[in-house]
Length: 179
Image (tube, rainbow, N blue to C red):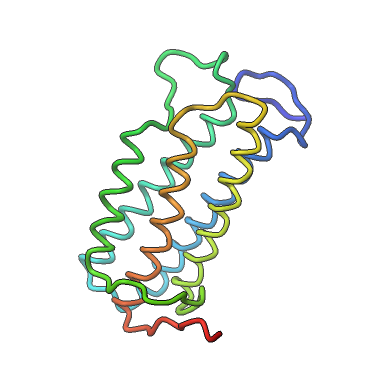
């Protein structure tokens, strides 16, 4: 057994626990990317590295907010509780568009590989996709905040674009899918 944000006791196999557990795993994956960048900055210019690290810091804080959002049923929320909202999704979209504007369009599928940082970002992206699926399963039976799923959907896109951007800035050639 474990407790939700409201202190209500539930089984650890509860779908809500699974959903916010996936968010925690995703946050750890983003933290791993930050650790890799701290050890080896991927040939990024200092300003680029500073920008990426600030974005990853923002993501980790948003993911903690998201975890709390999911750990608390709508009926148990309190005034002033930090929640994921549409402004967080817009903030993510702005950053995504800024990175994407520096990339050539994709003409074919690419393999999720490259440097350690790029590969770790692709891993975080796939964890984000699974998290989104688990949250959708939760939503099939319980109400959740309206901004949660759009945020997760845009976050996986952000992680993909960031992986491509770092790959390009690091002079790492993207590996195209060979059919």
